[in-house]
Amino acid sequence: MSVPSILIHNASVLTMDDDCPRASAVALAGNSVLAVGGEDLLSLASTGTRIIDAQGRTVLPGFNDSHLHLFIGAVGLAHLDLTHIKGVDALRDAVRSYAAEHPDEFLLCAEFTDYSILGEGVAITRHVLDEILPDRPFVMTAFDNHTSWCNTAALKAGGILQGRALPVGNEIVMGEDGQATGELREADAMAPVRSLSATGWREGLGMATGGDPESVTEAERASDREILRRGLAYCAQNGVTSIQNMDGTLYTLELLEEIDREIGLPVRVRVPFHCKNFTELSEFTSRAARWRERFTGSKLRSDFVKMFIDGVTESGTAVFLGGYGDAPEENGDPLFSQDALNAAVAEADRLGFQVAIHAIGDGGIRMVLDAYENAACVNGRRDSRHRIEHIEVLHPADLPRFAALGVVASMQPVHVPGAGLFGSELYLSRIGRERWPGGFPVRSLKESGARVVYSTDWPVVPLAPMLTVKCAVCRKPWAEGLKDEALDLHETLEAYTRAGAWVEFCEDEKGMLRPGMLADLVMLDGDIEAVAPDAIESIAPGLTICDGVVTFSRAP
Image 1 (cartoon, rainbow, N blue to C red):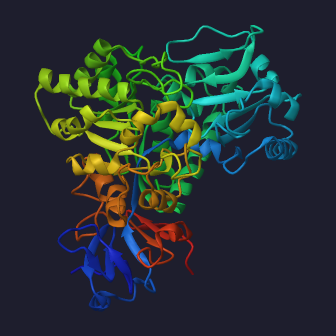
Image 2 (image 1 turned 30 degrees about the vertical axis):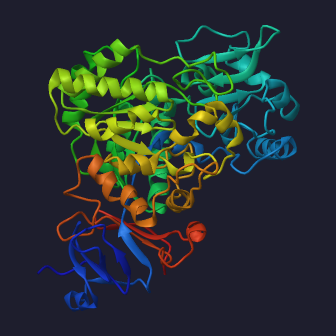
Image 3 (image 1 turned 60 degrees about the vertical axis):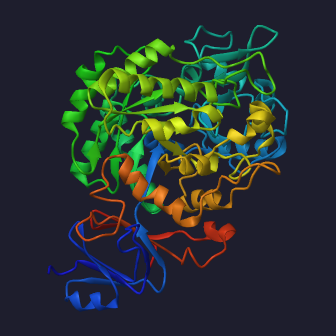
């Protein structure tokens, strides 16, 4: 047997391997797992082996965040974080302090804004933001990244104070005075202002167009590369060893390729081809297939297609069946017609691509299920592992279709109203009481036979995996009589590790600690099974290893 390069012992190892679910030691050799077992593995060590005494801490396969936005999240690390800000006074203090600390920034940006930051039912307008910061362009973006609010200076600088024609599903909200209120819904509405930022909104192109920047200087390219390095390091710091990005451009792929050549990627990255409603189907062969052929390494791949069918509930851009609970005359506008969606999905499926589609409302989810069913009829059934991202409100008639069609439920526990960082009153009133039983139906989907994978959607919510785990296991029904949709701790960890590897067709390489698998693991700074569920967030990653290399360590 080979000599271990790293040997972790005295640990509580949760392997995610059904054949050997628990162990106390793991030996790594190079970039693979050499052995999993008991303290007798110490006999394998030599003078060159790094021996780590876990002191009872939990060791897991590295977290696989199967839905996030790396470039956008990395840029946002330098922006004002409004996660815990509530009320106009607190917002004023935070914005003015940030502005004073960044005197040279033309556009000041804030992230993680609660739709009810000023109070339940209080609208956020440019006039409120003008009182806070009247003389410098300022934009703050909702936690879901689907809505932004700007002051008048930002609207003027972006040339949209008087509004602008936009594609379906996007809106610059206009006031009775014929001028923009300051609320911008979806990527095309936000782009004129966000493009004024220091990065020129290059990080948003993967969501907005799927295309590359028209021009970029060497200095800008170097800056973007450094931003991505910081984002990757942040992933490693959070115990993440694999990420599945949910927006993609060739520019992003090439930056990641350059980082891999220079220093090696500390995280395995999967990047999609982003298909918009204006994308020509010929681009699946002229662009997407070429990316798939070019980026094939274990650290960097591009082998799936990402799409959107709708927006989000809070802004009214999600697509519902039968209207919103507080606005029955509104259904939301789908970003594709059913025929166009069917054609795009069928073509991607014909070419062997996995497809992942953002669908929030029950109407949008039904459209996507119909498109997947159509693709199977046109091309024949295969192990496609097509995905629906988010699944916030599901019509009961569509619940069994996930398992029947082999569609993966890709969900985010921190998104659940009342379970995570944000209030539930606005959301629950928007979907309507009659839809509550179908809200975020994780347990129901799992019991129906559907495969569930977990992720964060960072920067929509924090990347911290223990927050996600806590929200998943501590979730409570919104009202008496509703089904408990929470997963238990081990189901949650499986959805965050092994299932994440499975959904990207890598179940034979990672997601478990088993001899021969890739040496990707995380050691927490405590025993996750020994703490109360509501205290899980107090445990954090203390050591991250990806490809046999320590990518983050807080331990001595």
